[in-house]
Image 1 (cartoon, rainbow, N blue to C red):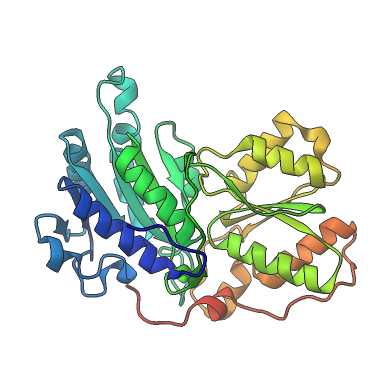
Image 2: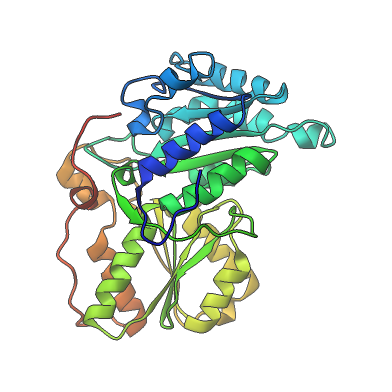
Length: 358
C-alpha cells in the first residue's frame, strides 16, 4: 500500500478496502470473518471482491451467532491467526459482550502477559435511512470504559490508512473500530501519512484561538464545516481536535488547546450522559478546571431511543446548524449572538442517499 500524495482523492470505503486487502495479502495468517463479508456488496464495499481473490478459508461469512463467532475469532487470535471481525451494525456487538469484555480484554492481565489477543473488530454506527432504535446506536464509550480494549473512531481515509495497518501489524491486543455508515461514499483529499508516532491517539486538524472543539467520527467533519462557516460569517476562529482513539485520548493535546482558547465544545455520535462527552469533561475537571472561561458545551444524541420516522430522526441528532449555533453562543457568551446560521435540517441529506442497508 503506497502513501498518498497531496493530490490523491480517496473515499472512506476505498481506504478500508485497501487496508483489508493489504492485511490479507501481506500476512497469510490474517482472516476476515463476519456477516456479509462475502456478499457482493461486501460491507458497504469494504470487503468486496476479497472472497474471490483470497478464498473462502480466509474470507468467511458467518451465521447470526455473534458470541459464538467472536469466540472463534478469539481462539484464532490465541493460536497465531489475526482475525478481523466485522459487525454490519454496532448494535449486534452487544451479543458478543462476554467474549470481548470478560475474555479478550482480560487475557493479558489474568495470565501475567503470557497471552495476547491481537484482533480487529470493525463495527458500523450511525444514522442513515431510518435505522430505528436497535440499528443506530454508538457504543464507543461502553467499550472504552473497559481496560484492555482500545477503541478508535476513524473520521477520514487518512486516519484509516494510518491506524488500521498499525493495529494489524503491531498492536498486541484487541481493537474495536467504529466506522460511520454515512462516510463510506465520501471523497477526501489526502496528504502524506504521518509517521514516527502511534496513530492510536488524538490529532489537531485545525488551529484556532477562540474555542476548542473535541469531536469524534463524523462529528469531526461537522466541526470542520461549522468552523468554515463561522470563519466566513464571523470573527470566530475554531480549533478542532479529532479524538480518534476515544479509549486513550491525548490529554495533553486537549489541555494545551484549552489553555489557548479557554472554551470547550465536545461533539460525539452517541448519548452525552456517561459517554465520551462526559469523559472529556472529567479530564478537564480533574486536571485543569481553571482553564475554562465558560462552562463546557456538549452535543450528542437526544436521551431517548432513536425514532424511525425521518422527521423525528432529524430532531434526534445534532446537525450543522445546531453545532454552529452552540459554538457562536459559547464564544459570544449569549444566545442572541446575531451570527448567520447555515440552513440545514438533516445530516443524512448531506452525506448519503438511501442505497440499501449493506
